Image 1 (tube, helix red, strand yellow):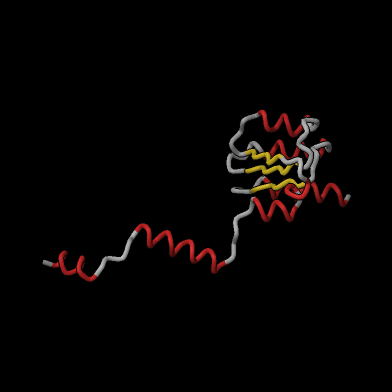
Image 2 (cartoon, helix red, strand yellow):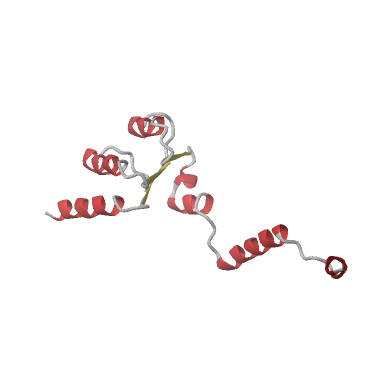
Length: 127
């Protein structure tokens, strides 16, 4: 009983619009879970990200997903388990969300797009 409810909630969550499933350390060897994931691929806004710990070619089901060439499926392969771990994934793949750094990047971009005009440029434009 508790497992069927968990599967139902999992299925509902990944079938929502704009849902993303990040798989870290999952080998895709559970057909019940795979069926739910495969069904979610019928949702055009679903994204599947797989961090493959052991990208040595033995993971037939992950290889099959990669070979679909679906732009919504991203397989990050690494033989370095530290890079494919949750901490490595966050450090190397996820965007840096520190607010101050983000503000500096935005400020820099805007300054490059709209350079400040010098006082002389403003006077020349007004004449």
